[in-house]
Image (cartoon, rainbow, N blue to C red; front, top):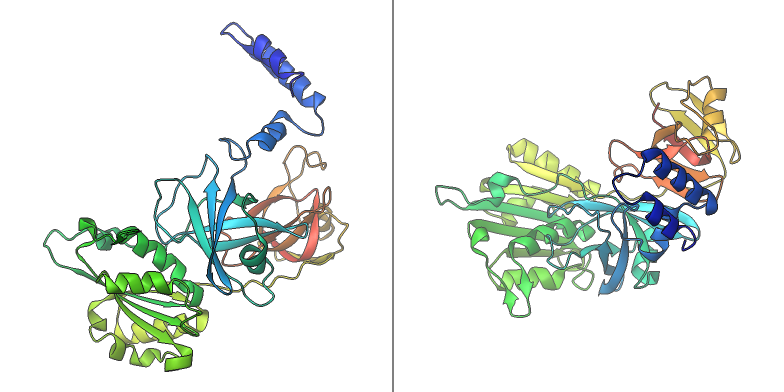
Length: 391
């Protein structure tokens, strides 16, 4: 990099430099480091810089239970921030395969600029087990901007002008507690001196019904119990080994003023289905977010479906998605067909694809990617299992 950086500086400085000359010098610099470009070298020295692909560096791994840990990350300069309750998609490389998963942020905005997610290792979970048991401080991970609508409505978060209290109920199960903890930590920060009761949260009357297999397996149990002891919330803990499975039909027994509360629920699908049916029958207000297990099989080749056209084709692991689509009669956008011009980019809505240049696998998991999917270059990627392309 040192061989061409001074040249760029001396020839491109000053207001009299012509744009054509700058462009020519940049092309020369790029050619000198082919197949890399100067930005690649900048990423080596400062991967969290502004303008780089959004990444984060793991700065701490804090065990929560035997199979759960909080991963603290310093995000890149282009991190746009988040609202408590939102989630972030994290990409990690495991055995040469890049896997993406979505995790709720477990706090509000922090003064130190760090973000954190709490991950529970699930049986045969490639990413969750890697993050909980194997990831090390200093590891770089890929990030997307925070998203999600499971957040407190402004009319709830802000104190009513008439001085009335806003009554909320949070129902959480397992790792579904993580977005709720993010909201609670923002409303009631916990310091070395204990829970801080902020004036902006004084109007809130919060009950939390938290379900876990057992007390030792309860993620954020200490946080919830500290908030309960400080009077910030009323905690109703339900442990399967002590109380049996939660019967949603008897939720009013645990929360006598249920009809006066706005409910936020997050957890497994079966629990949320039961709560949705219960609240719909009672005419109660409910906001939910569901955690979905992801078990996509990565292989060589697979069935490729093109969602808008309805066409499908069985493609082997060496055939590009561009060629596979054209063989099925799908009119595919393309340009150089070499991965240079990006004229072939389309959204991957679900499934896994492999970059034929380096073997890197990209995975889109339903419920974890946004409606826009993950944009891929079809001319240099092949199916790595069943996948759905938006065209």
